[in-house]
Length: 430
Image (tube, rainbow, N blue to C red):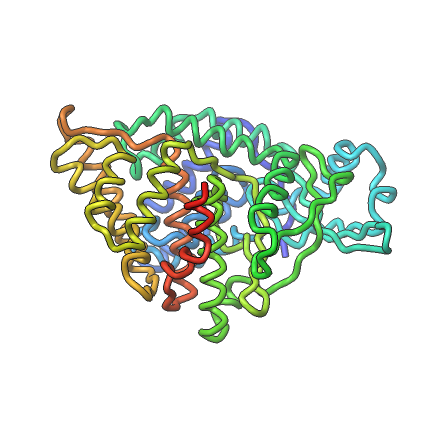
């Protein structure tokens, strides 16, 4: 259930003041009680801000390695509510927005519309409703943007002083920071366009057509616009419930998740770059429902070619071919930095080199730490050895660390190489 409605702070100065408040309490807290209080305060502030700030809180709630180990427990507990329950927006404003976007009164658009959202996240909130169809009535989920969120998000994205500390520790200031931040701005700005999200949802449904274990909600285009998205209402277990399920169920869900992510990447050249647990529902027989397609990253042709080479080499246990593919992907000149980059990428592909593989939270934290270390080495490297990450690698890292953290919580051994081999003929046919 979403929290009580609050207005979204939209001015750049106001949002910076709230963020400063969240950071100040966290930095001055020492004992366990103080850390817990700081985490709860930060969650409240980030939730009220919504937008990019709320996304940071979501990442802190589930991506291993984002929060220091000593403070991880209190922060994960406090931030967990941001996955599905940031504060809800004012009902009257939501009603006006829906009617304005869809061009008709609410009672003509929907047979019923629950003004209390059942979920509220960084950009919008979701309402249960019923529509009339040619074959009767259908339950739908209506995602509505928080009023004022576009202005708030643009204020965040215009603020380089906010973005650089958020992402600079992972990618390094020499790693094409300007280009990386432009990709960040582009992807997050696209999340404001629900019409585009509807197109992408239909596109991913086409990618996985015929796969009985991958389900996506159907879009209802006549009740969809830039700030309103209407789809079938989907049902299933939450991520927390899935993590408590029998091991055999968790294993099949992990297999489905891997197939969804890497078939989309390697066959179709797109990935859904927002893997937080609130975007999944878990059903019997290994079926997973995928809900959110606001942040989708296309993979450039040259990088896609290298990605396929990396996966091919890993499945073949060919270390030399793998290293060569890393060098091509990064355009890395010889030297210590190149060797460290190869080592980092090799660690990221551990689940394909070892069969079966159990993803653990310690493993995910370690590769996040290794990326920070690689960025630090790059800052110190001379110009002869230095190389920059491709601009689209930032969201690939966001996907990988977030996705791996999801799999780590399912806590099962899976032969991920075998999963990829099932769709690999489609890769080779391209």
